[in-house]
Length: 431
Ligand code: HAM
Image (tube, rainbow, N blue to C red; front, side, top):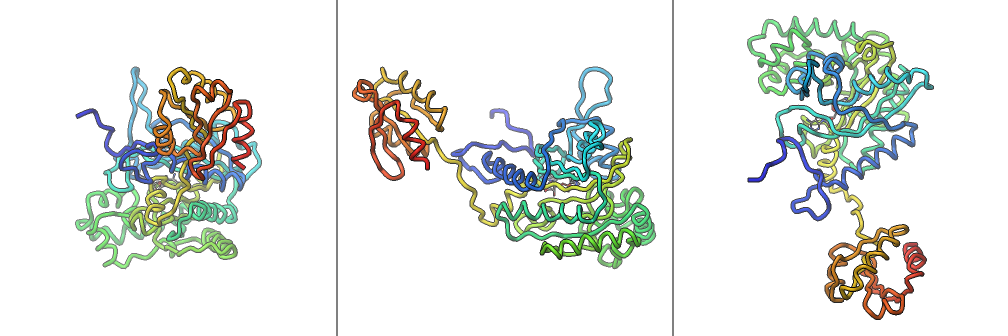
């Protein structure tokens, strides 16, 4: 068997590929990216790219030592020499905060908004909607702790899914408080779970020492049973006065704007850098355990990376999961069209002329041409298969007269047009 692509990766395929699904269709990725671009750039965000690999230290400190990502899902890249290794980025935020610090964006007017789109890498157990190379649209805002910024970030996320045509989406909103609130909650959880440590899964035993809150997010059925039995109090009960007031205001703005959300008092995100507002977007078609996207505030992250303090908040969607949801909702995506003009020579000696005309026509229209001469019937069949709007035939008569015989594949209309008038004709017919 020929060599296969690595497990947990996907090819993004051209139209017409056999077994094409929305989440493997290259045009669908373009569509999501362009939709997100429209929504986010209208709101003042600018696009950024960061490297696909970063210093190991950045990911470890940024994402956090207690996360599954750092503990078991990192793709490490080594090369000759004694460098300790790089890590293929598992998410966008740590790299973007690094870029903020490194490129002096502090001088720019705050709040400063940016967005990124690209591949991320996590060595996860592969299943539907859970890949090792996946793609995110990521939005981040720097320089403000105003709850208005939190509400706007959540609302923009909802705007993106609306613009994509998704319906059954739910925002689950929570707050994980300030660090001292979280510490108090972790103390409470440690006390609660320690007498039952033997019943916890191995992962959760480990979480009990590192970050007990993560136990609540466990995928083990046994852990979830114990959580239900113990009647664990939610994080929201432990919010301090300031974090509580901030969270109230975020909700107030969302209600003002009619952005629907469900309060989820138990929200736990899978990354260590969050504080205060945290949320996820869920969709029935993708399954309860897998979020379409998630985000939160991370005011301490820049300092954690050794930089000056700057507050930040953001979110990311998984594009593959958005596409699975679009498929489940039956969302129609505009199909990328075929060529506006498909030129075909009716005899071999006119192929060079057709090729030259096609190259000229590309200045004003998407144009393809046949590399071999064809009979008229085959030319029409071929043009139809390629989804062409106009087919242009060039036989010896047309060549002698300096014309092209055109047929519209949609309406059946036929016209003979001088080679010099082709541009004007196509532009007019496109109106
Ligand atoms: P996250 O929750 O780890 O957050 O990932 C965001 C989204 O990426 C998920 O909701 C999911 O749709 C997608 N995703 C994650 N892992 C996979 C995977 N293995 N396969 C397919 N899709 C996946 C973050 O990454 C944060 N950086 C979000 C953020 C930005 N917070 C603040 N700013």
